[in-house]
Length: 61
View 1 (cartoon, rainbow, N blue to C red):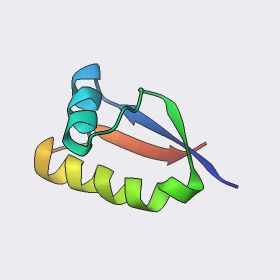
View 2 (view 1 turned 180 degrees about the vertical axis):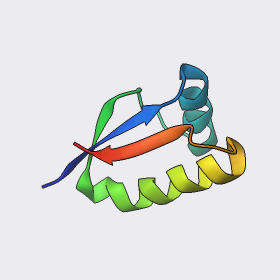
View 3 (view 1 turned 30 degrees about the horizontal axis):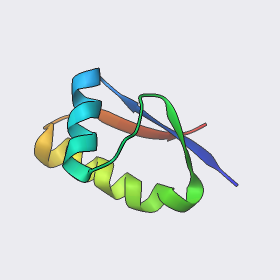
C-alpha cells in the first residue's frame, strides 16, 4: 500500500480547498492510495481553476 501526503502553500488555500470539495483535510495529512486517484484529479482541477497556481500538493511519502 502506498501512502500520500496532502500539503498546502498556506492555511488559506487548504481551507478554500476543503470548502470547495466539502472536505476536512489538514495540511500534512496522510492519504491512502485508494483515495489518491480521485484526490489527485481534484487537486489538479483546484490548482488550475480556483487557485491559478500550485496551492495544493499531493505526493507519495
